[in-house]
Length: 350
Ligand SMILES: NC(=O)c1ccc[n+]([C@@H]2O[C@H](COP(=O)([O-])OP(=O)(O)OC[C@H]3O[C@@H](n4cnc5c(N)ncnc54)[C@H](O)[C@@H]3O)[C@@H](O)[C@H]2O)c1
Image (cartoon, rainbow, N blue to C red; front, side, top):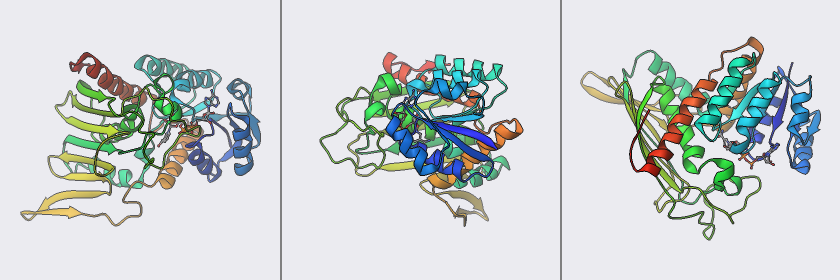
């Protein structure tokens, strides 16, 4: 049995806790949160054996094999490094950290350690992604040379630490952009990034005066502070000539929320979001193919379970993890590159 402690038991921890409870190779050894009442409540709901309020106690406990880090982004680097140094396997929520410098420090700690570090790129584990990847890997879409991803919320700033740049590192780009950029980059074969053009805007604020339209909020929701962007867009060009266009928002005067991930190849194309669909050509005819699978659209419960199962398997077998630390570092380079390009009003060359 792998003894796991979930650190930070706010909103997203529910998905980790449920998935660990469903994994037969895991004992939910404990939960940890600086908010003791919250930690106790989650321990009761999920039958965790121990309650911690200090991560030092978690890392010092020799019975703990692995941790999920579900705290705000500012803590990811120092908690991941401390856990790895204590020999614990780590599943760290996305983004891996707030800066490239922090991400590279985590990478060095992971390389020194025998333990696994997996990044919480949960969208890699959706059935829609797994099915599409099997077609991409067989070359059925040819070379993917263009991708386009949007995750636009009209009114959906999660508030609290998400809106506080000191604790989050940024707004929708680092929070939502990381998911859609990663999934395109992963399916495109993880090409090396060459040039990043990007813009971030903070004209609208948190829009706390208007009814919140997105379901997602930080456990300690608070709309009094907002120091993050409300919209970001980018054009990312890769060394192999492929390109990716992305836009993400917490607040935008748009008619609808939008979630779209599209990939275009030399033999065919695909829409991963909102629902998996593949585009191909046969007998001088274009075919839009709808796979007959469960979860054609991304399903949180199913994808989280697959993600946790993959992490547990990697811990037990010694890996490799399907979302390794180096992918965390590469994504961090893209995210930081977009912020830098916007600030300097000039593209970033990597
Ligand atoms: N994979 C996904 O789809 C997804 C979705 C949402 C959030 N996330 C990520 O998960 C992480 C947490 O987000 P959330 O929405 O659950 O936030 P949240 O604010 O709801 O919960 C964070 C919890 O961490 C606790 N905490 C903070 N610092 C701590 C520390 N040093 N030690 C112990 N506990 C500490 C807080 O008290 C809080 O209970 C973030 O990195 C976020 O980007 C991922």
